[in-house]
Length: 297
Length: 156
Image (cartoon, rainbow over all chains, first blue to last red; front, side, top):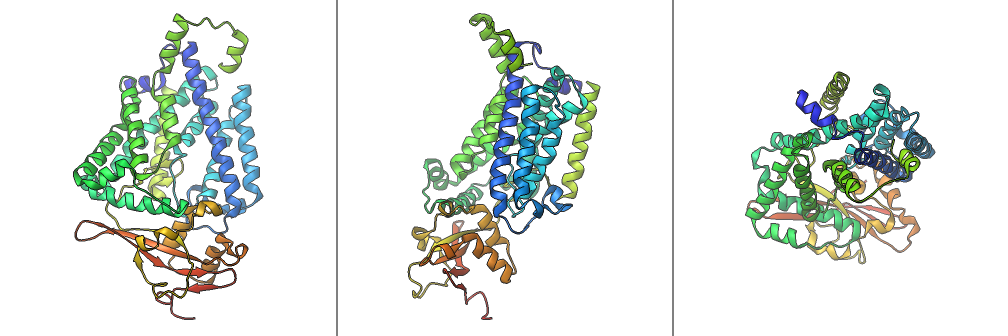
């Protein structure tokens, strides 16, 4: 257990510029995508009129009150609660407030029966930043904690997704016929959205052979199951590559691209701190100390 | 490190409790069940852009290929296709408020002369192992009238 926590929370050379850049990039990513989702949902929510499926806190509070200007006001508060701690590196507890309000924005937008997961890891990142600010005040420790906290739930999420498949369907989940059925289902969503649909090369390949379709699903299931390997520094880059490959495969076969997951994996799954430190030692002499202190910490 | 362990343990416990009591979803906590039930028949939705309302097969269930060249592109009208698919596939009791809710989503009153047919689309694997996709017309919306599929709804 100690080894696991060491792998999650202890980054190599924590005081180095490379580590600080990677951690601030993670924080920037979290803020940017929180704001992108927040405003995207704020503009859509006023079109809604009824709650089809209450999610999260919507089971306990009537989120219909957000079906109007309140969604925009919520978005403004979330924006301030993200930008103030990011730029001023003070009042970082605001991240936790932003997380709670972000949850409300999500359950207001997705009260129509659809349960998308594209923003879940951004949610965990914001939750990690908020919890870190509440319990580990020093930014030098709170940022690595938020980073490790998010990695923990990313790994848990992928492995949990694989276990869900094995529980709900069993090992026959990988049968290629199932992929054919999903390709058909997603083709209807694309047809409905754009008015047209054509199979791409990988979809044609999958439909041409049940064995190939089965191999594609097997790769996906095994990769997801191994998601917990992201907890360990040694395996992190390899499982990250496999997960990105899986997301590209999902995009090509089912037309669902988890862009946010992929960007987050790229930022968090590779030892960028090591690469940046090596680059700095070899080629760059970075003399802008005040700027560095402002951009990093 | 003890503080870190305690935080992870508490949040993990919260995660387990919330997903266990909320059907696997309490954002951002989730069991991530997407695509977990393989091989199940599915139901989605499209909107057919109807040119001729006198044709004999107007209200009949038909293979998707027969209407795929006249599907209304919902993105051009600012309608979220997944929300529409959920609405048309999950609604069981089509009472007046539900039908009006669907109609107001389209704002067809602003498009005089248009005739749009919200259609449920169902897919399944047949006994031969092939995927069969069928389109079931539900309603016909014009700028001033709503018609219901007489094969599905008794006249009221």
